[in-house]
Length: 295
Image 1 (spheres, rainbow, N blue to C red):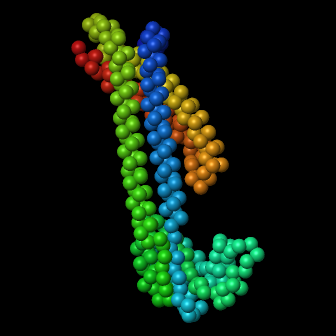
Image 2 (cartoon, helix red, strand yellow):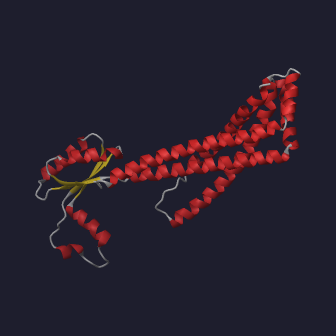
Image 3 (cartoon, rainbow, N blue to C red):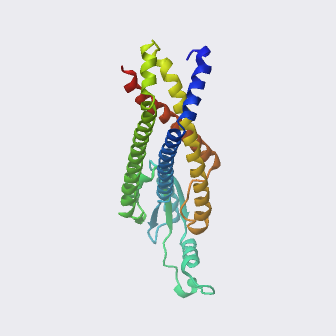
């Protein structure tokens, strides 16, 4: 852009916006709806991913030890568990501690579960977490082969289905984002094309008197950036208001579903959404202009 022509380009862009107020409003509305839908799709994807990641991180292996295992073997077994590739952390749970945990979960107030059972029937155990939750099945197989391990439990079957669902949810979410992004480009470019079509004679006249393509493009680009920016800001305000309301309601009603509420992350997300809206506006303007400049 030639700096001496900057004032002319801005004047042309603003004049066009004021002259075509209804079309400008329609463009802003279309862009706002596109960015709002795209923002909702991304927020859903992020929150679904966050929820699935938390579910995956909660997956753990519980290795129950044989009843008559020696103390030395228990200690040695702990060392062998730590040496398994992919193991992140291990925790020893004695039979007495396991009984107390059971009593806290299922025992009634004032009811002595220890006295009712007599001898403690629960075995000692190790709780193992993996660096990569998807390696739980392979690690559990290795643990089951160790001497002194009686049984290994990690939610066989359920864990595999969880990871399968998790992968498909991420694929579907990514596909939806791509689909909405292309839909936004199409709608924005179509709307801006209508604005340019209304001024096609002006574009043709400027071409005939020798104006370069970029001289013609710049007012339209500025116009597209302004329309996309306003539409994006409106969409972000609506999205921000709605999401803040959702966070307040969900935290009280469905507290076990962890929604993303980090203010720094959300600020970056809204900033990225604004940049995306502006970029889509520029891209839509560029796509629309090429057709009318080919004269």
